[in-house]
Image (tube, rainbow, N blue to C red; front, side, top):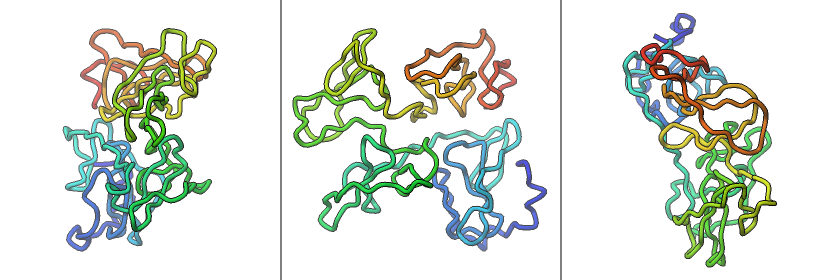
Length: 276
């Protein structure tokens, strides 16, 4: 069972009294949950949150499962041997698709559009300073849940190139309005800037260190020094080493054969000793 459980037992309520508490592992919402009831952390399946019974979190920070365990939302407990599933972000870029009339702004995670009754996006709205990142539903404080990491061709961009927001070495050609699919690559030593690749351009990555749908980060920008997992919720041999802060990318390194990089301890351990 999870750490801190002994401190929380007096707060728990029977599950039957809280039928409306979310069972979605990709939603951090305490609406309908009783005091002391657990919900999943959408960003890390080894963590969970505690609800206060009033629709809010009991603690701002998540609690951790024991080493090698995964939080199971169906029984609201940490379990060994459970599968760790990566939550795909629920971001919308067209008014007709959005369930809440809000759509993401492609190149700024602190902004979004509100659609009118005719399905037309209004002026750009900005998130407040204490919750600066839009995640497709609300403005919140976790940058990893941003909805700004897709290239987009606006009306009038036909025949032009737009940047890959996740990799300053790549770009996309625009043929129609919408999310483009044809990716181009700059030559070695060049970065894409404005509308062309150039050896004089600087690397400007709009979306840094995005955890992709496979649970891994590629490319990786060194925002601080140290050793960091390529896949924050998986045991794989690859990891990143950052000797200094830089605005460009580092290549993944690998642990020796028979070892995986422990995403919590940030060291190489024997594969059989890595629980994820």
